[in-house]
Length: 265
Length: 342
Image 1: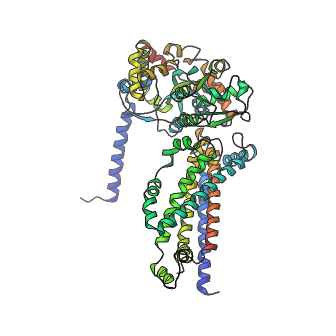
Image 2 (image 1 turned 45 degrees about the horizontal axis):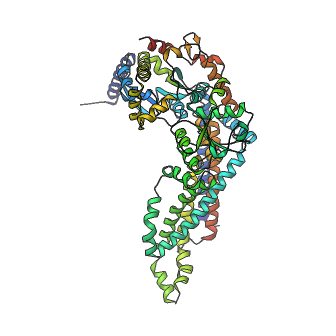
Image 3 (image 1 turned 90 degrees about the vertical axis):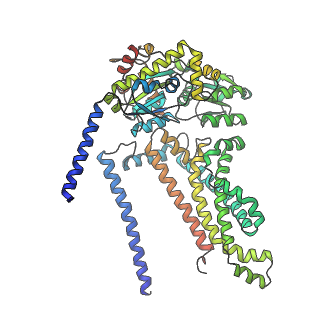
């Protein structure tokens, strides 16, 4: 291996150590602060209490459902909301990027929806879609859609005009240009949009699960918080965090496989 | 001017000392500068005292009002020291708060909820007896007094959450779901309750039997302990302001309802009919053995709090409940006694 490569390897190893160090530091501070009794258990439960809470949740579940059921239901909602929202959003964004008329038609709607806080139309969603999983998934769908569509639109718009003209001059049809030039060029941005979308869908999960609860990790955190059961809240947060990290890594993995050429123009 | 580092430090220290001295003097004064009150926007006589500025007048302090969404929020704010008073917090969050050592005291009652929170069932759901609830969907805001009563209803009728689907919904969401026909029943208070009664709902009275079985629910006044120790006069003044409002409601209900209606943003008739559902316990009765009792002789209501806390432990809502003595210790009727007198 060449010396620069090795240097990079060492650099990476160093970075790892920084990460480990920071985690260890946080852990030590956590233990110190909770052991010393400086903070009330209600604000920050100690590691022992957190572990007990976790074991209790694993063994007995939370309010008539097991922890895994809550997790699986949340995951189902996130994946369905994300998949439908990102798919429709991406198609819409591609169309908007490719055709100005379509953009003029949909852009105000997308731009109106994008910054709207979900809590604002929560009750409307119940009125329209009822209290089942449907209203929750629709909420997540509506969250993912604008993010994905804006990303896809930007992706299409950033395709260099020279490439399109080159393809045209070689006799490519409109569809061929889209299929072989525009779409692949927009893919990296579409993936970035997807990762952003899953982030916001994930963040909206708690809002979705308030709709008519009693299931899901988001609801569990909310309900435990009502009685300041901070050990359950922390367990829920850690699980949500890990699950989110996993989903993001998964998307990143797919991205690296599909658009391995990104950024190497 | 030649300000060396050391002299600068000395100067700052002197300034800080000065501030401390000033603060120390203020701490001993009878009236606080500002009182933080968490309240619910509701149709109750408390709103008269708020609207007419009686709380400010009788505590001799500026009041910063924060509207709370639930008793749990009041507990959290009290734990963080952001609220001094919790106005009309429900008995189940209060029992939870005392169990979790939230540093506050129960100093008075607003109402005995009685039938004001009760079960409403959809006529079409054809629910005639408790057994008919099997397989039905019932909504209630979790963590509330209504939720506590609903669970008490299931328990006393040998139903479990496997037989009945209990959904956690805020009152406005319940109304929305009700209108679509997604829920068969709800345990809730007005205005949601009144709206459901208008839209094909009927009462399924449970409150009398549940009160008799020990599932009494009430709305209470709590004060942060450290605040009460520092400003006992303000605490008495606060209760006096409420007493004045309560007396107005008892003597001139129409006038009282008009003020409440304006505060809550509803029609005067609505305010009046909603207020008539509650039993606003007079101060003398609060000091009787039935409710809070007097200093040294705690009333029966402390036992209700203890039972409520035990129930919440069974529900895994709180980790543990202390002995009855802890609830008696957290109930301080000295301020109430003074406020009832003068």
